[in-house]
Length: 344
Image 1 (spheres, rainbow, N blue to C red):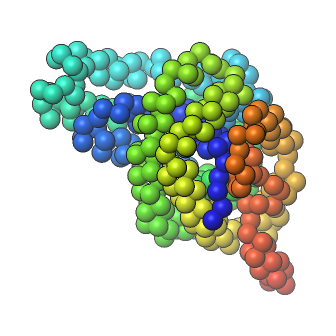
Image 2 (image 1 turned 120 degrees about the vertical axis):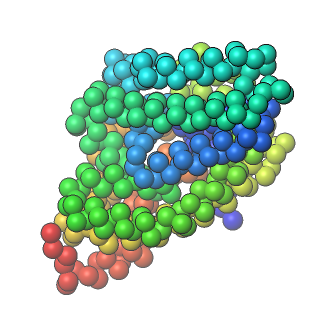
């Protein structure tokens, strides 16, 4: 079985830290544990549905990729300013009120189940509102050219995640009818996707609190992506020595996710016209300059302490090669259809 490297997990974890919606404490009640799992599951499903493009952008900025898309410091400040929104602040105040209503907070030993449920409901509401505000800011702040570049990036690098988002196909100028067909593809595969997400959530919810505790305050005030990568990589190296099931479990769900992703992509590719197919091939096989620049940045960042890697498959930025996102067998099959071209 292929294995992923510590640096591969580090890249995934960096993005996860930028978009985390789950509680950070290990000392959680059963109600909190389930709520954290539900929030994580909803986040994965929303990413797959294409409803959370801001998660992609925030993740890119977290690993130093904003430069490749021309995201200025002024734009970055605006994009992370959703926490200043009045509606977001109102929910935060309500959460703070619940925390201070009784000694020990909303999950104190003598806190009622009603108080705990109210607190968790507010947390879920806060997650939804923040994400909506973040998406609104994204569309208000980034130019149409920047948004196009990000969707081109998603297509060119779709091999790095099994969560293939429908929204990225918009850059291929799909029709309303094609959009409906893609939705049907997603709907048919949703039960299988949900089962896979459940496996991911179980693994992450078990190990992530321990990983967060191991990281502690080591990332406080550390803004340089390369330094953050180095710190997390060192922590994960030691963590995996103590918990070998962490790396093994991640390898298993990423490998099975890749198979599921290929099945999903192939069904989606069949919806594309020949002209759209050629456009997508060009983005993958001959990526535009901003995609190349992103990988140059990532190679520079991930070049630190590479001796810590244990070899094998490295998902994400370190593993990408032109052509990877499309299974070779499908390329061959698609080429045999040339005598029967799909029209617009």
